[in-house]
Length: 458
Image: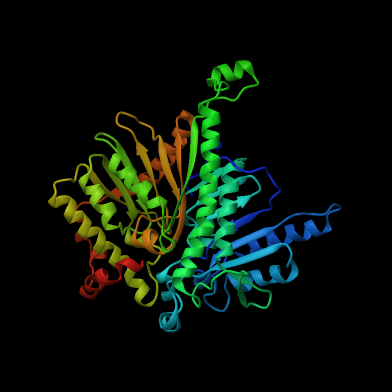
């Protein structure tokens, strides 16, 4: 990846600490079923040690996967995790989120892989006690070898760890629970996601997740009042001199959740606000592994005042490049979408303000996504978004997504964020009209014709 960033704890307040074991909210990759075996072996080894400990262990492992993606093929995430469930039934929980939109005849007729287009559990958060790793990356082999992504490590940050633990638990509660015999069950009292009434399920899921968000918001407001309306607030220098009073915070962490099936649209609202409010002279670096911006995001990019540098995957580093069957045409569909957007930029005379850049690295694929905001006149970013959303239709309307906004006045952290951005963009070339004249950019007529029909599914 582009390196690990460290951020100070943000303003999100948490409940009294309870001991918590490693947990994860992950999904299998697009093209490789299941996490690497060594990760499962590591979990098994740690659980085994907890059983052999002299003192009773409260170690718990909670894993949240997508149902369709986690069940794909004969060897998949479910089959890899079953031995853990069977051996440590009191300590391991595996939840499989099933979108309420995949049901009835549609569910029966849609084959594997294609059924994933209807909606996924797409959040990638890795929790270990009081520390959190937020990413857009899955836990499959390629991400540890030759797939470019982004990660942020929030070390010893209990408030954020609490929030995401509660979020994973909430989504887990509205998901199907994997049993030791490879069957699944609904949590007692919960509506079934695809057999039960869809509206009733979505209402129950909305309440369960919003309870977590509202609770965190209340804690955040309380901490904000304590921090900014308290006599104990000092400058960093005065705090160091006094030695016993809280220093003024310089970095804030804001979780942003998007679960449109449950009518939760926080990430969408914040992203649109950022794009709208960025003033003339500000620079926004936006990157996505799959360039398929929603119409609302495209309109804001084209109609607002800030300068944009949009980084996307060249066809050769697209995760679907070289795939068999219809999936192999997906990179060409992204090229078609990119060309249409570039033409619109040119027709509006915005080529200087809105610039497209294509990432390329031999033998690698590109999956990084996020945003950096540089205020007018500043050479360093004051804000970044990092997490699972791709800024496309699926991220906004179909999948369950989470990311964080890191807002910082800390110059060292700003330097790290700037360096991460630079390293990604250094491996890119600026898109021009000549780009689309290359043989690799030739898009077949049938791909052009079907792209408008399918672009909301990938």
